[in-house]
Amino acid sequence: DTGVSQNPRHKITKRGQNVTFRCDPISEHNRLYWYRQTLGQGPEFLTYFQNEAQLEKSRLLSDRFSAERPKGSFSTLEIQRTEQGDSAMYLCASSPAGGGFEPQHFGDGTRLSIL
Amino acid sequence: AQKVTQAQTEISVVEKEDVTLDCVYETRDTTYYLFWYKQPPSGELVFLIRRNSFDEQNEISGRYSWNFQKSTSSFNFTITASQVVDSAVYFCALSTNNAGNMLTFGGGTRLMVKP
Image (cartoon, rainbow over all chains, first blue to last red; front, side, top):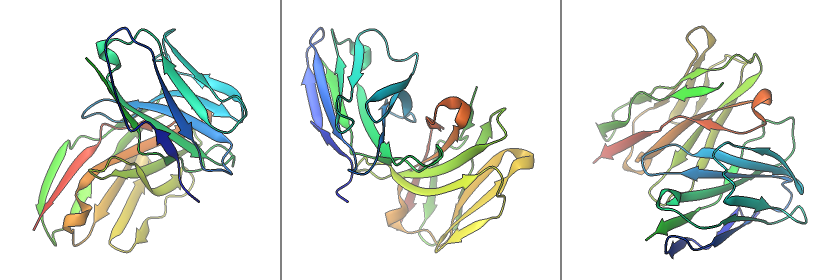
């Protein structure tokens, strides 16, 4: 069990640029979640996959955000035309399918800074 | 809608003191789970405990104990004989079937344990 892996750990970019983050979940987990955490706040849910199907999306996920999990394994989160307000830690979590309440295991996150 | 409130934003104690972190939740669902996560300075969220809405038994794990009271919608976390390594931000979270398996987090409590 190697844990949830996220890349890159840090991303600094200029406003208006596109960025993409990658998440590799724990191998036997078929559920994958994305959260966003701003400084001093708790994580906020963005979206959730079961295998390759995106089953839930938060209102926080504007049209500039898109997430994919093409083969039900790793996932990518893309932000287009980044804005200052996108600066945050983006967290990925995974869990096995087990009635919906299995603990989610989190990666170290990708910290995005918009200049 | 689901909501989790952690009224204590920051707590400072001296090593070996006991400390209780408060968590109050709101949900209309009758089936739900409550979680506590620890976020050390390194940033990764570490799962500590899960509790379902039908099990109000208190739980003890080493120096950690949890008190779940449905009557007051509270799920408090006590660390006995605190240690410097307990310094972290602690998050309480809620998950319900009607919320698509996502976790709703509180704002977190920053615990500082001084030697």
